[in-house]
Length: 132
Image (tube, rainbow, N blue to C red):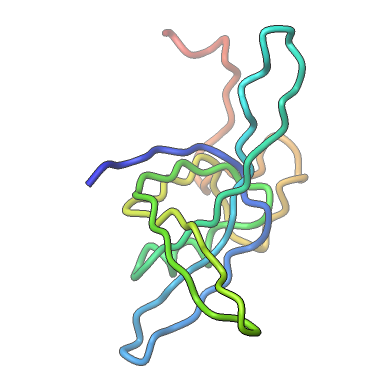
C-alpha cells in the first residue's frame, strides 16, 4: 500500500464518534496550500478529509483545534453511498500517523501569542538560536 504524507492546518475541530465496539473515530479536514505557479501566483489550496482511529483519534480530539498545523501519514481510500437516489463518491485520507506540529490543550487559543502551542515546561526559542 502506498503511503502519503500531508502537512496542513485544520479547517475545523475534530469530530469524534465511537463505533459499537467503542473504537474512537475522528474526522476533520486540513488546508494544504498548493505550490505557486511559475509566475508566483497563488494557486489556491486543497482540503482533504482525514479519518483517524483509536487512541490517535482520542488524542486528536484532546489536543487539536481549528488552525493547528499537523502532518498526516496515511493512505487514500475511496468509497461511495446512495443519497436521495444518487450515488455519492467519497475520498478520504485514512491516517496511520498524526504528528502535532503545534501543541496545546484545546482550551488554549492559537492567538495567545508566542507561547501558544508549547507544552508546559518548555519555552519558545527563535530560529536564530537553532544551531543547524
